Each structure stands twice: as C-alpha cells, then as structure tokens.
Length: 177
Image (cartoon, rainbow, N blue to C red; front, side, top):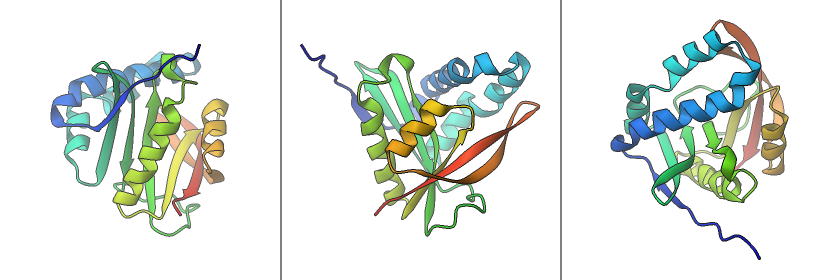
C-alpha cells in the first residue's frame, strides 16, 4: 500500500518568524553539526537564524520565503532572493538565488523536495529570474545529486564562512526556461 503524503505550501508571514528560526537552526545543525566545530556552528546559527533575521527576511520584498506544513507543523522551507549578487561564475541572464532549501530529515525521499523545488523555481520567475543559482557545501553529495537531478549544473565555487571556519561551496545554476 502506498503511503499518502499530504502537505500545505504557503508563503511565510511575519508571525512565522519564531517557528522558522527554530526549524532552520535545527535542520542546519542536524545536517552540518557533526562535521563542524560546535563553536563555529553556534556562531553561524546565532548570526543567521534568529527570530529578528527571519522576520526581516519574510518582510523583505526581495525575498520569497515558502513554508511547507503538515497538520500545521513546519516540515520544509525555501527562501528565494535577489538580495545577493551572484558570484562571478554565474554568467547566465537574470539570476535569482535559492538561498535556503531545507527539508526535515523525516520527509526526505517522500517527494516533498521535488514539489518544493518546483515552487522555488516559480518564485524565482516571480522575482524576474530567467536563471536560478544556489551554493551548496562541497561535502554534501546528497544535496549536490538532488540539485543535479533537477537540472542544476556546477559552474564554480565560492567561499562560505561558518563561524571562524572558511569552507567552500559549489555554485550550481539551472535555467528557468
């Protein structure tokens, strides 16, 4: 018997900031914590995933934050933005960034990420994009494979600072044709 998967996709509202901050920090730490120093992880989480930061991003017209919920519980989200200039290796026309793309581990492999990626690409189009780009940690092969499956190709790298640790992200690009 096939498991029935039901979830709701919606735009984030300012009232979602605290829930989003908690969820984003938890998923980031679960995903990258085991491979990084605790002090670097703590510094990064404090800098990027506070309630204030999430509220500001939700309110910013250059950011579209999409939430996925099951029975009112946050299970995934993405942020699509034009806030950051793409790195020089992104040479395609009208690039828009998928800045965050997080799916709760319990929902991975159930088709939710495919729906979220389609929604992220639609959000990029809404922001005027003809191309979408993202940065993914070079030591995250599962994510890289997922993005490749969805039409992204590796075009270069950029530095990523996690606390005091300077790391390398792969930069990937897909057309929105």
